[in-house]
Length: 297
Figure (cartoon, rainbow, N blue to C red):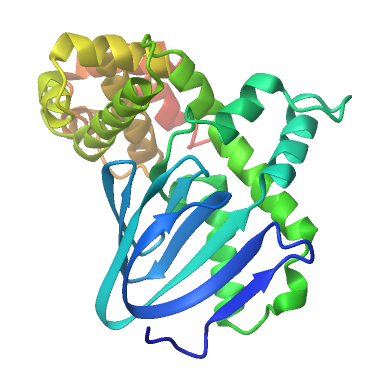
């Protein structure tokens, strides 16, 4: 296995948690997640198969899975693929979960602790720009690359910080899974992945003339099924979500004071200025013209 001098593997003194900075050109191996695992890629691409799902993890992305997951990893690259693997012990995660949910007791919240330890946990890929944990991983990667970190920096305090970030990111995910009406855990996880995929499609296309049916088709759901699940998961219908995305973008453009209100209305996909102004006032409690005037004072 080709490696570089960047490689560093550090265990905690009790061998329960570890961090591994790697630089690998070729790898093909079964993957057994021994604890709660984070697979972060800082440069290149790692191909994972986890519980039957395929994930291409590229620059600034990471994969999360707990010990109930199984799969494989493939790396094949002309230049070394750089990444960070962190195994977080369930004892540390449970301890932090207890303090996070019930600061008055040493015992974890049973439902939340079970979520992180059991089959209900949503193994998935995330962008580091969109999560608290991701930002922390980017920071660790920068500091390690700059030679600012050594093995002595990875104490229990480091893993407590990791656990806090995971929990903060996943409280919403936990609640979203509970809102999906399905008896089977695997079905709930599959549906949440699909809904998140549809949401990502909307996020990338909301300024276009978008039909919600297209978003539903993108994540392989019927329009009504997508509408119903999206509303249960995010507390807002996909139609309302598109309007809200457009309005927040419009507000940002108006604050730059470079376009007329009529131009902003067209840019953000509204039929006319009247419809735009009505929606803007409803969302922000102020007319677009008054919003612009507020920057002049």
